[in-house]
Structure formats: structure tokens, C-alpha cells
Amino acid sequence: MSGVPVMIAAKVYGKDPAWVRAGIVEGWLPIGNATRKGRLVTDISEIDSRLGRINYYISPLKLYEETGYRWGGDFDV
Image (cartoon, rainbow, N blue to C red; front, side):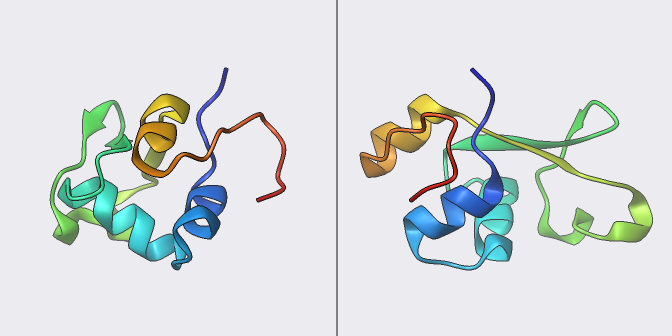
């Protein structure tokens, strides 16, 4: 199964997608990880589009454990 899109996680939490991205990068939202060119991104200052695209992976299991939301691959929340 693939990861949960940031947009879906944001809806689950009732927050903006930027909040989810920042939480993953800073580590206070333990539902996945962020990488750029294969390297883990762990500092908020690295969220800069001039440095290149960041890929976010949100674990369906971790999101379920944190929120009770079960990702089934559809986009209804």
C-alpha cells in the first residue's frame, strides 16, 4: 500500500497541509518522514523550494495509530 497523501492527513487533522509538512519535518508529528534526494529532511529551515523538491511519506499505520483514520486508498475523509 502506498503512503497517505499530505492533503488527506491535513483533512484528518483539520489543519493546513503546511502544518502536516512542518510537523513531519520537525518530528512532532510522528506519522512519516520527509526526504530530498534520498536524504532525510529534519529542519524547518530546509523547507525551501529553491533547494529542491521534498518528498513526504505518511505511513498509513502510523496515521491510524495516531488518529484512528484508516487509509484505504480513496480520497474521502
